[in-house]
Length: 242
Image (cartoon, rainbow, N blue to C red; front, side, top):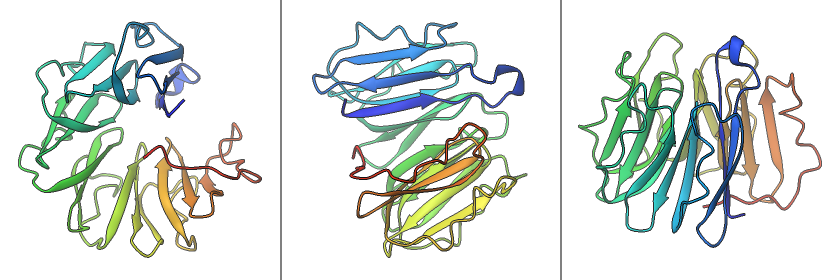
């Protein structure tokens, strides 16, 4: 495997109903888990360079910059067939986001909180998607966000020198060029308690937990550990798929 993705669920009634996706070195894709809407029907995909997973859907980026989708189509989050020159993908629960080669962004799906309002973004280097918000990292190290403002997950305008971003359900995380980590939004489980982390090169955000990858290949974690998702002690030689 060269990359993996996980489809999160945020409804208590759907606890455990998720799926996992893997990208093989030969560009084929494998998926396992809950498949109610066909989100695991990816066996025929070829020449895929990147995968992303949201609730009940899977996205695959092809080498020519087009995007494949499988799964739930009700909210329009799989309406990606017209996308072109895409270089990166992100999945929120109900919306999908693409980063184009020219630094612009595109989003489809549920837009009830304005989480798809990315048409005016320029010079974007990376994107991340939470439950009802979308985050963009500018090439100048600034960060911007659209969507739900109730949890504070979009309060990123003061961030500077950021080199990577991640979005959980209701929180946003960034890594600075100095290897420090910043976080805003819901902190009900301590998922934003990252101020003392050092030497971080990449971050990932789950629904209510946060992971940080150190330059030495070890991993730190904070937040909800109900299912052992923060038990990363002893992990070593971990690397970012990028």
